[in-house]
Image 1 (cartoon, protein in one colour):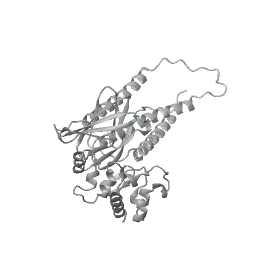
Image 2 (tube, helix red, strand yellow):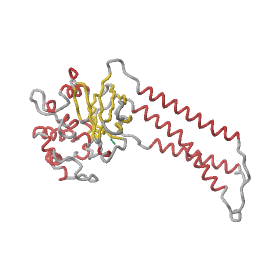
Image 3 (cartoon, protein in one colour):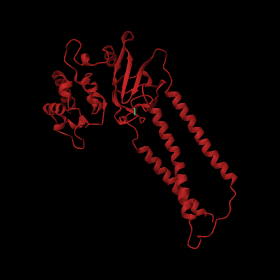
Image 4 (tube, helix red, strand yellow):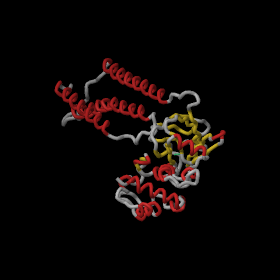
Length: 348
Ligand code: CUA
C-alpha cells in the first residue's frame, strides 16, 4: 500500500509546523552562561545554525518513522502475510546520500571557518601566555611576571581585552580545561602541551571547570577565573600574584571593598565568584544575587552574613556552601571595607 496524496500532504504540514515550533523553541532557550570572551559570539552563532539545520532533519526522520508505523502496521488477519519483495530504489538512495553529504560538508566548512577565525593570532608581541597545569584534582596557573619572574596562582587572573594563549599541560591523567563563559575547552594531555586562545571581554569572576572524567575528585576540580581591568591585572602580576598589598592600599591607605569583593585578598575566596553584584560586574550564581538580597539590609546584617553565613540562609540556598572562615581570612579593616562597600552599592 502506498500512502495517498492526502497523507503526504498531512506529513508535510505536520513536519513544517513541528520543525518551526522546535526551531522557535531552540532560539528562545537560554543555552549559555554570560559570554565573557570575544570567541563566545561566533561559537554561539555556530551552535544556533547547527540547531536550525539539524532540527528539520530530526523532524523528517521522526515523522517518517511514526507515519510508517501507523500506515504499515499489521492488521488483524495479516499476521502471516509478507510484504512485496523490494530490490532497492536507486533514485531514492542517490537523494538520501547526496543531500546529507552536502549538508554535512557545508557545516564542516562553516565550523572550520569559525574555528580558524577565532583562533587567529594577534600581532606579534600582543599576546600574553598563561601556563595551565592540571593535576588530580587541582589547577595551577603560571605567569611570567616582571623580569621573567615566575608567578604561580591557584586561581586564574586575566586582563580584559588582551589576547591570551593558554599552554595546557597535565601532570598525571587526562583533564580538560574549560571556562564555560569563554565557550572553549581543550583536553590537557600528559606528555604534550595543548593550546588555545581567548580574549576576555567582560570583567567578572567565572568558573574554571575540568571537563574530562579524571578520577574520584573530578567534580571538585574547579577554580575561578577573574577577568580584571588591565591596570588591575598588571598590579596583581607586579605584586607577585596577590591583591593583599593592592587591597590594603599601596601607601597604607584603606582597603578597597570593590577589589576585595571581586578578587578576594589572595587568601580569602572572592565574593564575586559566587555572587552577582552589578557594581562589581560579577555574575556568580552559586549564592544569592546581592543586588536583590541586600537591597533592604543594613550593615549589621551584611557583616553577620559574611562572618556567620549559616545564621541567615536565603530562601532556596543550602547551608554550609559559603566559607565560614571570612573572619580569619579577612582582616577587620578588610571586613569593614567590604561591608561599607556592599551597604553603599546595594541601596537604591
Ligand atoms: Cu580533572 Cu576531571
